[in-house]
Length: 260
Image 1 (cartoon, rainbow, N blue to C red):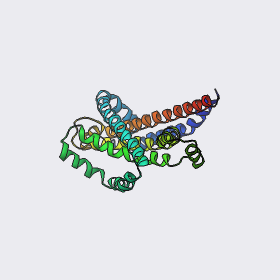
Image 2: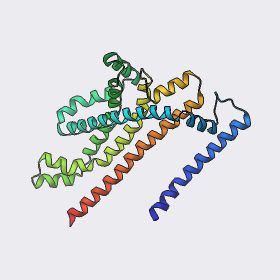
Image 3: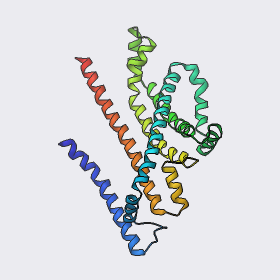
Image 4: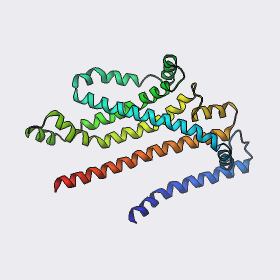
């Protein structure tokens, strides 16, 4: 009961501010007679949402699918890369600067190159998402792996722990909170990157939906796309936050059981 009341108290202020802004927005459009193609009212956007719901669901499903695929593949690559860079010092010395350089290539250049090399299928979009997602995950996890308590590291070495045991029992568990921070950043990037990739040659997805609405000056439909993108981003962020809390509880429970 206490936790539920605390959650309601935290959600109340932002919900009240958001509701107030929507009311002000609706009143301003009605009061000043702003045309729909300039700034549609929240009520017009809601009506447009209902009218395009079946088509919107189809495009949103395509975007969600490509986002989850690219996010999962990119995050997995980031985690493996972080472990490799941490365990093999010469690999880190040789490849880490190159990884930083890859993040300085503009996204629109990358997607154009991938389209030239792999055509207009799904492959270029998945590759772009992987490149966008793997770097924050790799950097966050690599930072976590290097933050192990030196006293515990020395103690484990004194009792004969191998490098492998040190990694699995101390360094990897200690990097989990850092890893989730990277995953949250990657999740936000992945949705935006998927939208951008879909606007370059895709026949389905929210990127294509927004592009068509923009070409037709359908401003209400543009806002419908924006609201859907924000909703998907929040759902992904929320799922990762829940996974992080479950991970923390599992670790605490494991530590308690180990201490008995």
